[in-house]
Amino acid sequence: MRSLENLVRRNLVVILLVLLLGGFLMLLAELLLTGHVDGIQNVAIIASAIGAIGVATGIFVKGTVRHIVAILLLVLTLSGLMGVSQHIGADNDASPPPLAPLSLSGLALMGAVALLAKQDE
Image (cartoon, rainbow, N blue to C red; front, side):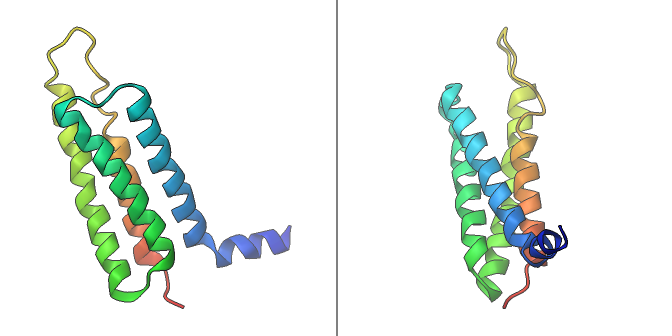
């Protein structure tokens, strides 16, 4: 058990980035499977794909590029906030969950924090 703990500690940031990659991909799959593809809804699909690419890239990059990817993920959090305003302003009978887009913001913010914590080897 001790060796597993040491392995996780040594690779924590990479493990977190892989889990975040899975989160972005699951979000992308859910958006596509639920038909979230009309007009402005495509922003969520594009943002999910960018987030997945960003955290996947973040596993391998170092230095300034790592910081640029972290900044990109921080900017990506705005797409979730935009989605909340769209969901709250929806005027159809089956109104979407108002806070659902914040999952995108949360994933992007966690990715940025993980990348800032990552040490260059």
